[in-house]
Image (cartoon, rainbow over all chains, first blue to last red; front, side, top):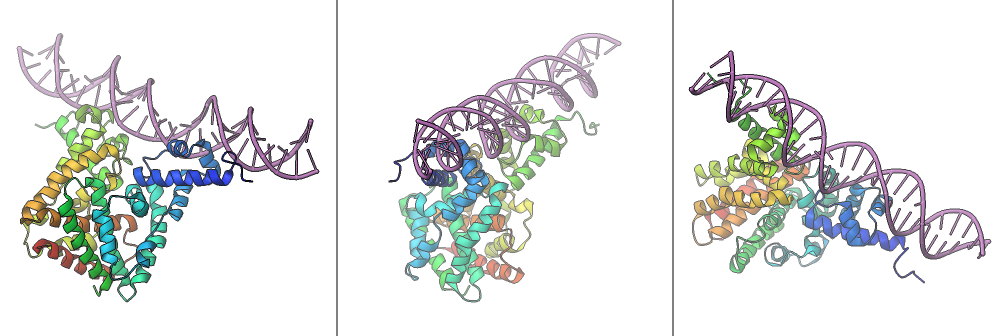
Amino acid sequence: MTPARTRNAAATRTAILEAARKRFAHEGYDQTGVREIASDAGVDAALISRYFGGKEELFSEVLSCAPNIAEFLDGDRDSFGERVAQMLAVEPMREEKFELFLIMLRSASSPKAAEAIRRHSHDAFYQPLETWLGGDDAAVRARLLSCVMMGATMNRVIYEDYLLDGQQRQELCEALARTLDNYVSGPV
Amino acid sequence: MTPARTRNAAATRTAILEAARKRFAHEGYDQTGVREIASDAGVDAALISRYFGGKEELFSEVLSCAPNIAEFLDGDRDSFGERVAQMLAVEPMREEKFELFLIMLRSASSPKAAEAIRRHSHDAFYQPLETWLGGDDAAVRARLLSCVMMGATMNRVIYEDYLLDGQQRQELCEALARTLDNYVSGPV
DNA sequence: GGGCCATGTCATCAGTTGGTGACTTCTAGG
DNA sequence: CCTAGAAGTCACCAACTGATGACATGGCCC
């Protein structure tokens, strides 16, 4: 019988991972302290070093678990642009879908996190996208899609949607969808 | 006769401002220490607090001086997309032109810097761009342009161009130019 | 020359960070 | 019951950060 809660290494590890994922997405690598993560997870901060080796390794582990682009690639190809644009411009910034982007954008400036971001984002975002696109210029089109998606997310992070009302966000969404689909259907 | 170098408040102030601008663009707000700025400028770190009040105020002052979008808005309207795309995808990441973007992207994750970024980027980037675009949906088109420009810069910051060769960057540039001009000439 | 303020230097503080090792406590196996 | 080791707790360290106030020094005006 699994012991309810305490004294369970696996559960503790998971709790730390979950708390870290949220914190990194909300605050970024630098702004997140191991004490905060531990507090959220309801464990002692020392356990982070014990279980993961340190903050950097924890961050790398988080990137491995974060949801990636797969969800959008699985769906209908023709509606890709619309689905992504909806997420980028209209839907509230739900962490579940945005998480990888948010972690990346908010942590990219930290040298400690940059290397892990490069590695993981390539494996979990760029490469799958490129394969999904196919064709000779898949790399360029993947980059174009990445530009629009990152830029749109970055704008929301910075301005927090202050500058656009609902109607404008709808227009933005439609334009983004057209641009994205244009890159998807290629050729560039 | 201006005293060569020492004991010159104006020159010291300028030196600090210059050094800070470069540091903030290269490393971002959090990663930059006042001691590093002072060292680059060849002055004592305490002078930063004396002259600017503190690191935050210095950052805000730097944003006021950083080169903005004006250069691109002054040129020929028809070549806007090409000129901007050249900067974004082909030209080496010269700090002079990129500086405002780099400072923004690398510092946006810092709460201390976020407020100043919002304010200054609106005044020095968004507002001029919107006015320059004109028309009913200028706000949306400005946002679209901002997405592409920020996203492209972000990609270069993260991946450091590892993923694309010269030929691909040229293709990327042309596609970006088309997209940008499409947003400029509107309607969305 | 002498006083005086602007300018620059220095030591140091208080806070925060990530990390470590010794300690306690719980549980499993005998 | 008792030991051994895993799991968790705690106190603490060393490094770094931004900031401050006391102090030294230079240059200008009287």
